[in-house]
Image (cartoon, rainbow, N blue to C red; front, top):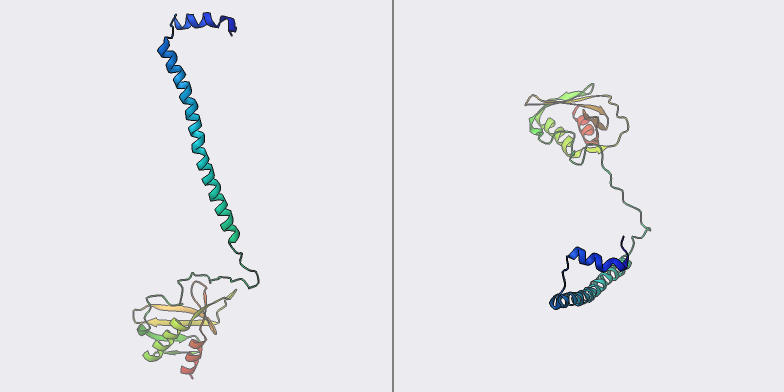
Amino acid sequence: MSSPEDLRHITESTLHSLIADESLKFRILQKAASAEQMDKSRRKKLIPVFCTVLAVLLIAAVSLNSIQAVPASGPGVLNSFTAGGADAVSPLPEDFSPDSVLSVEMELRGKTTDPDQCNALAQLILHQSVPADLEDPVSCGKLIITTSEGTTYVYGISEPYLIDPNNQCWSCPAFFSEFNNMNK
């Protein structure tokens, strides 16, 4: 490192005896003065930005303080659904047609092949069945529904419940009552 006394000698040897004339000196002074003005104008621009940020924060704080909390006096609402999803509205498939039923049979209880009775029983299963929550469904027999397309639907039964092949339970007391009335 060089000492300050040697600075003039080092500058002359590095710049190879270049000398600044009056116009270069003027330009250097002008740039220095404009840099001070730029610094002042930057500070002037920061003030409105800072004030705007403060105003937004103040408005947010006031609006958040005006929001009222939900009172804890009422009971909470619990949304629940049964396994199988919200789209499962019947133990029978979506495209099932009650008019196509040829027979409805419950093991050890009887069988009906009357088209009107079969249609009525299928309508009850379609429209009166609701999902039921049974921890461990155990069937005591079978319900067999045969259609004209050759499809057979088999369900476990434990009155008043139908248990589909996926082990989902459906409560349908109206079906069991009607079936018992038809087979007396």
